[in-house]
Image (cartoon, rainbow, N blue to C red):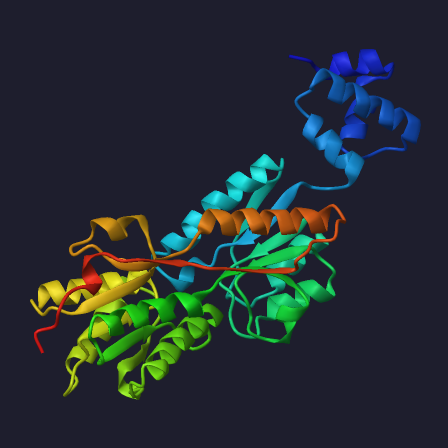
Length: 335
């Protein structure tokens, strides 16, 4: 393995000069600096990544905020992050995971930009009128969002999203085709951009089928299994309970399935995400599958294009999901 002394010897400089170059310090001539960096790369010196970064003025680090407080369990974004890290590593980039006070907080982003710690950001947990979109756009910082803000900023920034409207529309239509009319929906909090898109798919499918939209059949909850259970309990206590429930996520759907089993009351249920466990629940869960690896690939390419100064076209990408039909949606209600 090469050492700093080997670099110094071949470059014809002192080890101190090599250290100054690698740390970006000292009054070193450009000719000497380039000669040292060339030898570093030639020898495969262990600090060659840093040397290359100094040459192209990039940190080769991408910032990604983890807003764990929104949900105890979010398998979708965990899987997305796994694919994202893998895709970025293939581009010789690394991910800096950080936390923020809430989805729209820009303070953590501002600190990372000011310290030149990252080359760009990937956003998730997008909300309606997300303040981060405008902040990063006006700061001229490369970023791509997994999701939209459902605001005018969506026309000016880069985003990749799965068509939640189409996915929930398909799930609702599938339940209607099974003979259900009393179909409820367990939705996310109203501030969620993706949640609103998905809710719109339910409303559209019901309207297309000529089925009256019942306000009492729509419950908004923060994403968790417990909240899915509570929402199902509330729905099934109505004077005329639903025979089927469309859940905005598999996490919510797990709560509905638990309520059905615990109360020995059959009810048709669909989820969204197609979590790996969906196939192994009892009954197995009908769900809308998100192609998360494709999302991560598109996000990565859009971001790298921005960082490298290439025109990224198209600026936006809406990916179609697919409905995976299993046992849970084929259940016939006793009422």
